[in-house]
Image (cartoon, rainbow, N blue to C red; front, top):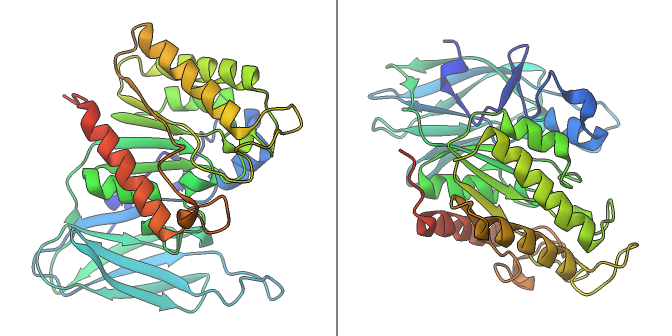
Length: 327
């Protein structure tokens, strides 16, 4: 069967392949954003399968070269239902293969997370012993951020905080997290403005401390401009801004422009609060500083699985408390 109707988490397609930046607008993006956008982070298959014993997936994926550090990394497929993970299947790296996942019974819905870091392209799927059908459509939630949003240091694709929050909310999460990037690039804001979304979340800022240093006034104005451009395409779409989470080495340490992460966070939050006070009633701020503790960080920056879960549930709770009317 054509996999297209079964795919979730898709932002754009480039020749049939899911990508995470507008393929018609890549020249305006920084190289690191464009490079990460080629990976189908968060793209998954969702389906119902009443009475079906198993599902087979025909796919292509990247096979690391003989000198690549990841050359022996297996291709992993995870099967989830609404209660949690059902099974995980690991196969030898192959440029093209078919995998079979046994289903536990019941009609689903089920979700299959493919090995997203190996750039999988799903070519087809079929049910064994019964039918498979695309899962019903859900609220489309577009999340923009950096490596934390992309899910770094989570041990499985399904464990990153956007995936955790999406499951808790029952939404279709579209992950536009770009490791090393997400520094308030205005071209990204314009792409978000043109992308269909029922709800939006922005979660950037930590890379504005070190990778490309910002001053607090610069990030204040960047946040104002980013929000304005997004709002030109989504004037009434519910939007939550998550400011940077804890980063112990940066909280009180000035960067090359003299800004601590604490000062940068304050600038983002001030710009957001001012816009809310000016009348943007469908914009919500979730301050990130107190959401995670040092025990939630795998490397002093990226959350571990427990941190991703904590963060995801905090975002889901904030969205529910905001009471967004999605009708």
